[in-house]
Image 1 (cartoon, rainbow, N blue to C red):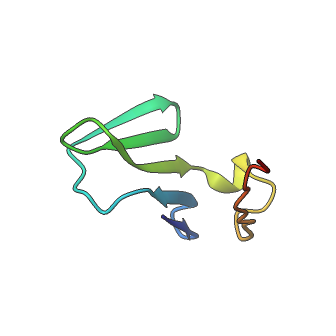
Image 2 (image 1 turned 30 degrees about the vertical axis):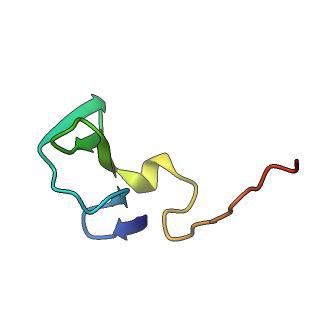
Length: 68
């Protein structure tokens, strides 16, 4: 998975898979989900990111493991 903030476009791109994009759907205004040939999501793009996040230049990454 890869997350990129495109400052010039003010867009956050979340790449879930390197499979080719066959279809894109704007589920809500400014939120675009890309799908592969099997209908699986492969990416998400969030437009006007600086207006939708508190700080688009900073990201927290965390992996949580269930305690069993």
